[in-house]
Length: 94
Image (cartoon, rainbow, N blue to C red):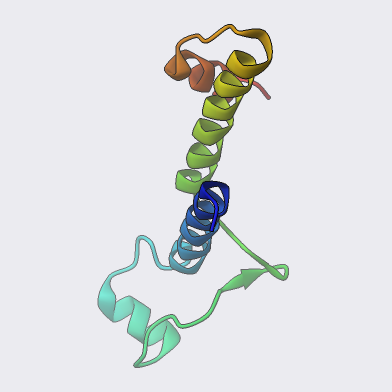
């Protein structure tokens, strides 16, 4: 398995876990069991057919995008800057 596959798997696994837990993130245990039954939440709670993700996943993706941007710039132009700066600048776009 290549490192790229491991990184991708980590990001997808994190987003999948976030999407599963998003619906119950701020509920107390008793509230979860009342809403989803004695086993708790066991599948995605879809909104319009889509599992929602939180800002945690969004910020993770912004950070990864910034790191990749910094690495790509270094490999293509030989200009390696501050990775934190690249991530910060990317998160302000859009």
